[in-house]
Image 1 (cartoon, chains in turn brown, orange):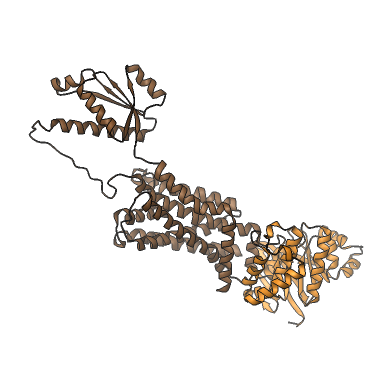
Image 2 (tube, rainbow over the protein chains, first blue to last red):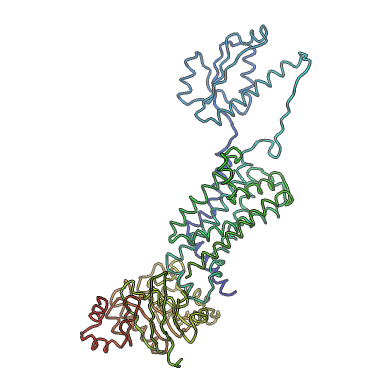
Length: 368
Length: 242
């Protein structure tokens, strides 16, 4: 035990004396969560748009006022002719143009129908789609207000309600994903690098020749990272609560337990990587390509798994991050207890045991 | 097993698949002896050494190190030997003192003992001024001496040195061999591999491995007589070329 304490002390010296790993450890989570929370977002805010109003009557003015009053759009330019539309898009000044037909207001009264064209810059298709939906809903809203007086025999009123994230805040989706990535990165990459570093420097050989047991070396190596990963998880949860006002609905205790389980599975993966790589660079490349990419692309963090082609859907099942994200979303957003996520937990537990088993076996072979 | 033999090896063999990396070597090393273990690259030196220090299990044969069987008592062997490799593996980002107390710790020395040993070592090597500096900032020769002293920290019966003088200048090498003599004088057995033939002359006895077998084993003087040459270099060349 005393040997073990000395070993862990040494590991902390390594970590705290290496500014690069310190930055990865503590800078990365904060930078990533802020980046994903603020910069990368599916919401639209203050979208610049232009108006081409051929009609210039009371109705169009009312609609334009409504749009400019919303926080989603700001009207940058009033166009005069059709040819201006292309020009203003090419300059990249606006993301959308609203084109009212001539006699919009008159047509509405006379024919009960009038046309307005919504033109969006679809170089970024997601944003274009969202913008078009937002404008649509403002127009419909206007229409409903106007029709209040008129009596219609029947009407279907759809009342969509977005549960668990009523404001559709994208940070709600990113927090579980970023947390998963960070824990994976810190746990797997940092441990694999720190173990391969000992191999590269030749100190691993010295340790193997000493009376300290191989499993003590491995546990000594990963222990500090369990500790640091837990700190990271806490920082991420605190940031999301206090900066992004994202409440944790479920039990914090369960969240902590599940996080530790995921951290251990990532650490085991890190050990596994270190057994197959001879240098720190190899370990880093394998961690980045072999772990980070699947975590980002296949875990359901950014791209919904249900819309992937079938082979990828099947493949996504072997990625521990997928299950952890489901668990996190369950606890953080839906506030569910273990009775709803026991299946995912069990899968994650199984994977963890498998990784530990494999890495212990691999490590023994290497000693040969 | 004779009392004076701290290493006793009989017909020790290591196979990797069909390849006999070490092919039935037999020798013994006496207490306090400086035993030179020579051979060209790939002759099987490192493999043989790994079996003796308990990190590789032999395929067949017998070997006792410090009185313990390499097959069944590897853990006891590890407690009783010291090891230093060509990389002088100390931690560059730890200070001299931290390195000493770390290695003392993993060999199970008590705190008081580590303190005592640290003081002794720093005084012996004249490291007072750099004892709180990171090892990474020290010259290679110093690292090598510290590394050797660290390998002796737990007072092992045998110390294994794997090409300990690679890359250091002749003066430092000379000083290093003085340290080796001192340790041998104090009763520590030295098992050393080297590529420098002048160093082979410093050894009490020398074995030369060729293709997994020990082809020659005697004092440097007798070996020179046997092969009718003036220096160990020529002995080595005659053997290695076959």
